[in-house]
Amino acid sequence: MAIIASNFKTNHTRKSTASFVNEVNEFLKSNDISNEVIVFPTATSFDEFETVSNLTIGAQNAYAAEKGSYTGEIGTVQLDEFGIKTILIGHSERRHVLGESQDEIAKKYDFYMSKGYKIIYCIGEPLEVKESGLDKTLEYVYEQFEGIDTNYENLILAYEPVWAIGTGVTATNDDITNVHSAIKSRIPKPLLYGGSVKVANVREICALDGVDGALIGTASWIIEDFKQIIENTKDL
Ligand code: PEP
Image (spheres, helix red, strand yellow):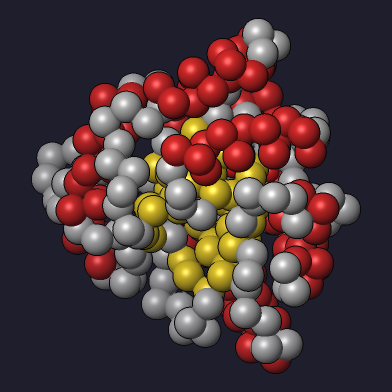
C-alpha cells in the first residue's frame, strides 16, 4: 500500500483547500482505495474536515511549543483545534530557504515526538553534494539524522534530493534505489521519495524496491492530477 502525500507549500486558499480535501475524500470513498493519503495544506486553510480513515490532514510546519510568545508561529494548541496530529519536519525549503538548523529541527522533532504526532521527516542533499558521489550523498543525508530518534514508532521518512524539488528533474531510478536501500538498511521505516514526482512517473517510482510512496509538491496541487496519482498507485 503506497503512502501518497501532497505538500501544498504556499498554495491554495481556504476555499480551494476545502474543495480539494472533499474531492480527495469522495474519490477514496467511492473507489474504495486503501492508499494512505496525507494532505499538508497551509495553516490558514485548516478546518474541521470530515475524512475517511485513510485521508489525513497534516501541518507543513509548527513551532516546538504548545503556545507562547513566538510571533508568526503556531503550536499544538492551534493544531489541536483541528485535530491535527501529523507534521512535516525537516523539509528542504525549511532548511535551505527558511534557514532552520539541524539543531532546531531536532528540537522540533523531539517535541512533536513527545506529543505522539506522526512525523514525516525529510532528508536530502543539494546538487553539489550529489555531484560528489553516492558516499558523500549518504554522509550528508546521515548528518540530517543528527539528534533524531529514528526508533520512534510514528515516523515516516521522505528522501527528497534538493536538486529535484520543484525543478522538474526527477532522480533516476538508480539514484533513488541506491539511496533508499542505504537508508533503509540503517533505519527500517517507511521511506517516501520526493522530487518532481508526477502523474507520468509516480507508479514507476513507487514500485521501486525500498520506495513506500511519494511526497509530492507541484504535481499534487491540481485535483485531477492528484486523483490520477492516487489511481496510478492504488494497487502497489
Ligand atoms: C516537495 O515539496 O516536497 C516536493 C517534492 O516538491 P515537488 O514535487 O514540486 O518537487
